Image 1 (cartoon, rainbow, N blue to C red):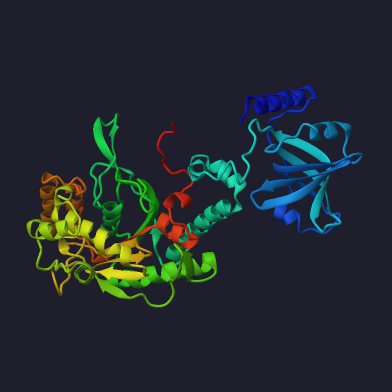
Image 2 (cartoon, helix red, strand yellow; image 1 turned 90 degrees about the vertical axis):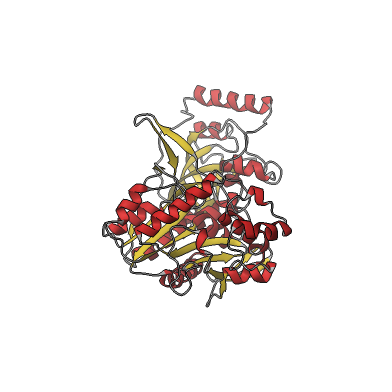
Length: 481
């Protein structure tokens, strides 16, 4: 915006005030949204409001387009139809201004449905010009930083966030219909637990203690299962103080649910049903276009063993290389620096992410991870060296992680102590000890299985975009300049 552009708009603001017009109104009564108004028969009276996007004058007649939450519609201003005061206001309009229109429908010679203005209400003055769609908003970073401009200029952006809202509503309805209860658990927690991630640390001044922004609601949701709420879920924010890339944001939205008396197998069936249901309802089918390929979410999904997948891609047998010391040389040969991955779980995870995950297009169930990777998961009765666990991977993104829950409090304490040993070696993404959670388990926890699904990743998948920033309204950005 130039100084002259701002000065011109400020001058129009003062002229509006001189005419006795309030340039920032308190309200306006609408009878229709624009999309509905445009479907009415000619002559139908309407009251609509919106932002002025275009304005073209043809002497005694001017046409404009307004935009509201439903879309765009054309309006007309005709000399002799408007009052002298309203004609004066029309001459002071700028693109970006909000106006209210009272009039009736008619159809132009070109067949465009139009609202003929009888009375004009000025609602809000825009002091900055809107960017030109193909010039001012071609910078993707600007679209993230000034999301409101992106929403104004780009219908596809508005549609994407409407899709996000629709997806979350479908998820809630799906789980509600199956007897799950939506709950809320603390975001500020005394220990960082429920996932392998570095936490954000804050301080509670009134309690005079450090707290952590949650990395997962898992242990609190399982406390509720102990309390008799046998099927619970939460959709909320998690925070992980890790690197940023197209599939990772430090602040993100997760769905987690837990069901008593289930194993991971029931969750495999339910989450596939959920994702397929949401895809059909939100997009009209199960085929999606993503990263230049078409992926079909329908039908059965294959199962691939985690240990088998690592062996196939790297030749490394994790069953044999079951300690950090044994695995480190082989991992180094595949381009990893073991010094940066100081625990066995971190080294296994790094190897998987480098050598296996990029090749999983999916959808695929990745199953039976090594037991050291998730201290809250149940070891398999058939093979205690692996977990009753799965992930859903689509287009090389982990969409879902789920497992049968560990319900033995004595084993849970042992495995959390193992996490502390990993932390002592320098792995800052290990879980913290939660004595309160183990005390809860000692009252008796029923068999259960939990599941975490990344809402942002699911929406990005269904929208066919390759960065989570495209489905988060206000992603964190580096400081400008």
